[in-house]
Amino acid sequence: MEKTTLRNLLLSGTLIVGLAIVGVALFRSAPVETANANGNGEKDPQQTQQVDAQPQDIMHAQRPPVEPPPPPPLLKEGTVLPSFTLPDISGKEVSLANYRDKKLVLVEFFATWCPHCQHSVPHVEKLLKSNPDSLAVLAVNSGERPGEPSTSAKFVEQFGIDYPVVDSPSPVFSERYRVVRFPTFYLVDRSGKIVWAHRGTLAEEQLDLLQHRISLNNRRG
Image (cartoon, rainbow, N blue to C red; front, side, top):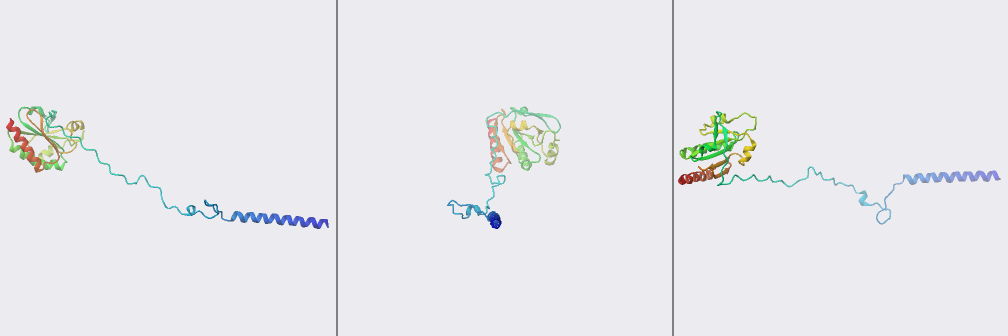
């Protein structure tokens, strides 16, 4: 009798343990849901919703265009244009000071590869022929880099230029005369002062104004 009771107890205990193990396994395999703010065990839609938004790529984000700084102003009218002495295409030294008290001088800073400079050549030649006794032209090739061979001689031959052309590949020289675009012009009177300055090609309006300044200074002597 006692043996039978003990055996029944052992069987009952084994059954209870087995049921407990099965229950734990079923509990672990069931999906776990996170309680929402109300704690009612429902799925939080904010957690189950798929996130489609991607972080913004800051490298490709549109930025407002950056305006380039304005060019420095040209040297002021009424100030003396600093003199210079530079070699021409034959190696001869040419000085701006040599024209002092003699003629008006149209100083042109140009580059041989500049189409606007090439376009200006016949206009400059026409001005020179219209004012042969009062005007001189001195062209300064500032378009070459230091160490590069000069292309001035080829330019003179190609366009049949009769006025002196000198070379200045120094960036410091260009900065001194505020040359940031080609061509750049300064008209200086017989005392060496600037009476007209211009950046860019010589359109009809600029040519008329330039001739007016030349005529005005001729009357003054």
